[in-house]
Amino acid sequence: MTTPADLVCKDLTKDFDDFRAVDRVSFEVPQGSFFSILGPSGCGKTTLLRMIAGFQFPTSGDLLIKGKSMIDVGPSKRPVSMVFQHLALFPMMNIGKNVGFGLRQRGVPAAEIKTRVGRVLERVGLPGIEDRQVDQLSGGQKQRVAIARCMVLEPDVLLLDEPLGALDLKLREHMKIELKSLQAEFNTTFVYITHDQSEALVMSDNIAVMNKGRFDQIGTAKELYYEPANAFVAGFVGDANKFSGKVMGIDGQRVTVTTNGGAELSAQAMHGTPSIGANAQIFVRPEAIALSKTAPSDNPNTTPRIVDSVLFNGANSMVLLRDPQSGETLQVTLPQTGDLLGLGKGDTVFADWDPAQARCFATEGA
Image (cartoon, rainbow, N blue to C red; front, side, top):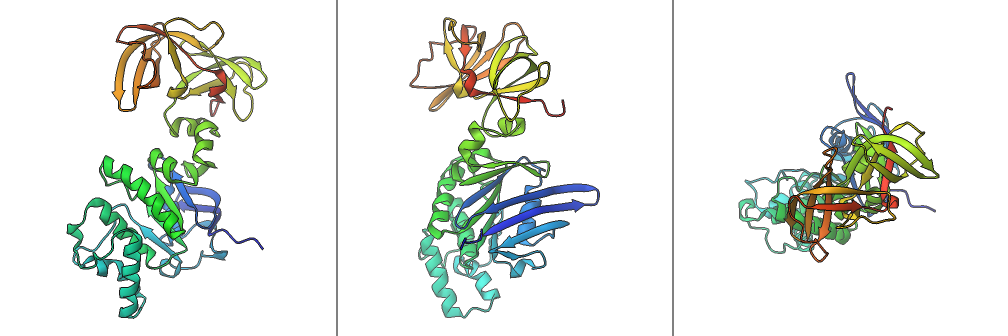
């Protein structure tokens, strides 16, 4: 017998008057997995999370947790907990009372609360801090206390609403690793929403990319990065150079596009081959581009470029290039261990990439 997914959404829809915030979204989250919903501000991801939590009810569709419909179940009766962006810890309570708050609301005996609070604080790596005050903790410790306050209730699903958004960059990078480790420690299903692609790529087992109330693609980080379903995913997940133009030639799944800047580029067509003359967009990752002082003889994607700047970025350098004819810019990422060719502003180089590493999509609406 197949174990039901912890969370299932079926054609979940939410309308606000004549505006559709969530549009027939369907997905499943397996037990014990880390599932992220990634999208820009205003795409509907917070509304979706609030429907899962029970703070808002859908206009139509169904939502099941552990195989049971939650459509008519209020938030306090659902087997979920939620970590908010600003954590919402109570400053007038010590850490023990913060973590045990939900248990007290449920009428759990004091002795059991003390035991469960101590146990969950130990599991998040903060043993023995029950008597400390909230303002005595660092940002990362507060984050773990917020998670402990949720996990002490033993939810089937933990919802996280951009919980790293208020942290500084270095702490945010550290907490990405911490959150993934905590999720594995508790083996609880995490549903995480964010507009930060790096958070989703690092932590998630699967990611849904949300755009205008819908899921454009669900997949692993590698699938979204290397095999995007459409132009929006290609441009939103990871850095990418984009070229717009018209399809001038087709050879199987390989298409040739003349860009608006006049360059002739070759790429792999994705999800259907555009027709000759169709408007199209080509995406190529900055790290897929090679630079050389002389033009390679066997690569159709070779164009002379002028170096505008070379920017040191830790492990890599970002090279910004300009097409001398069209003014189109190109971003290239090179490792510091590689050959930067002694590049300087104003130098001429040849940029090239394998057509198999470029992705071509028909322009939406064309």
